Length: 324
Picture 1: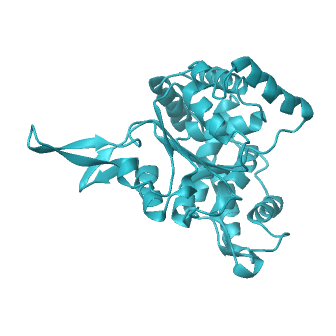
Picture 2: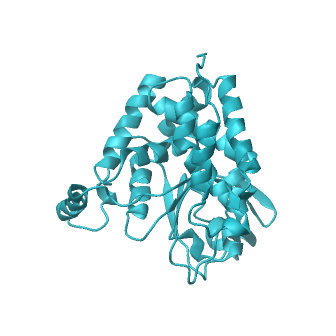
């Protein structure tokens, strides 16, 4: 597979998802770019905006194995990663694999479970492996988490710790549809489907093997100029030097920008990264990795998004980027 073939496959994925999810194409591109970069995505937005639908349709379109976990307060870590059970017939322990042994894990309302359950995902998300009673098991490839959470319903929820937030490649908001026509189109499609969940109607565009090939093209065939690395480093460091910020982006934030910018370039048919790729993803990759100082945390005029936008305006992007 080459860049041209990858772009055609990506366009088919985006067109298929667009037949079931009404929203901005740029949002769909970001989800696909994060998947090609083998990164996790956190969707945080109000109820009823199609977060879960978008995640399920994407998983089905990619043709990869996927499992869904509905996070609840009574969930246990073993419900996610699995456990060993005693088998009397064999007089031995047998591994019962949890839902993390899949390609795409749909973590619905991830902040409804207590910290010990959330922590069960840390090793999975970072190292693509789980340790169960001292034995380490590799997860399937590709593996990435698509999680959702509700930002306004705080009762009965547990905020995600900074360590886990840092493991999400991007944090996205689906947002409300932009026009009356789009709002009406949502109802028209529901009328045609004659069911609330159209996932079973979604055709597969790729399979796990083909998608791994696409990821490999992004990893090996997209060139990143040294000026781009410097540009990303300057953006990340500025988040730590801002006077409103207590904790800025970690180096993982820079790695996330680097990885997702390569995927975005490939989706657009380029085998090299340009500064606009970095700008496109800076908010989604850096904002959730920043913690404001307490005295500014409740100031409506100051937010991680406004700080990142200010940094983008101040840091000069490379004027000319060389290709491979």
